[in-house]
Image 1: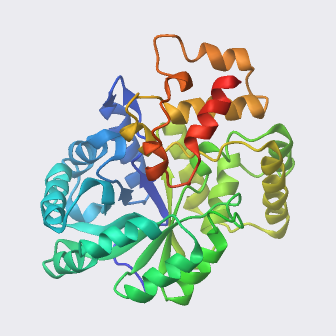
Image 2: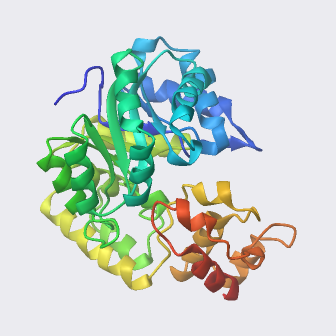
Length: 365
């Protein structure tokens, strides 16, 4: 299966755009879009909840308003936490079109499917509604993003044959992780004849801010940035047609463009380095947070959970001291000690992290 209009296999993930205060920095975003398109790339990915709704609006103002519709491919998503009943879905979809300023989405994904969220989508007839929207010309391709085990993906794809592509979390750390099952899910998608979109290829920056021993492995190869190895790992799977990177500054973008402009799959020596790096990272036992911020959207105490976990991980990997981590969370900011244990965060976490337990551990440190 080939998808028309896609020029190259690097996608601009719009979940982690640069901010100026509490708003998207349009100057930075405009320059990044221009650089991205000038380099021959054209796939943009957003969702209704990204940056508390600011991502879709920034897409409209910085991409749609400045480029012809045929110049870019735009993907958006239907998230289960933004509708309660069947009647909510079409109005939500229409609001997404309006927020983005377009008449159709090239890809529309049923977002972050798990065993539980799939039940809600089925009960609300999401798949049938999305298929009808495709018939109306408002969607070109139907896809899904997935966060569960391979057997659940197999069940969903067996029951929903109209799905054209599957967005999976694939990176060298999650290759054989029992919770993520990157390779097993990839194999299921291929069994059903689906092409694959990769999300979290650098694990939310996890595979950029490496423990020193892991970093040394790639330094010896003298072949590129730490991110480039992670991106090339994901893109080396033969049925992957798109790798999304959440780019928030020009340096990251230029590095990613350089990685993909003349793409070369990993060689045997590089694969061995990723295997060993995986072992080293797991020995450190960091919290597997990708910084998606879904948890902060539902936290009643407004705790910056991803920031807490990032600081904790940096302490574990000896990037900063415990004192430096503490200083980054002054007393006037919400922190782990404000947690009331409601666990609303855990219900929306794509990584199935026991957030409340980890917050207590971070707070003690």
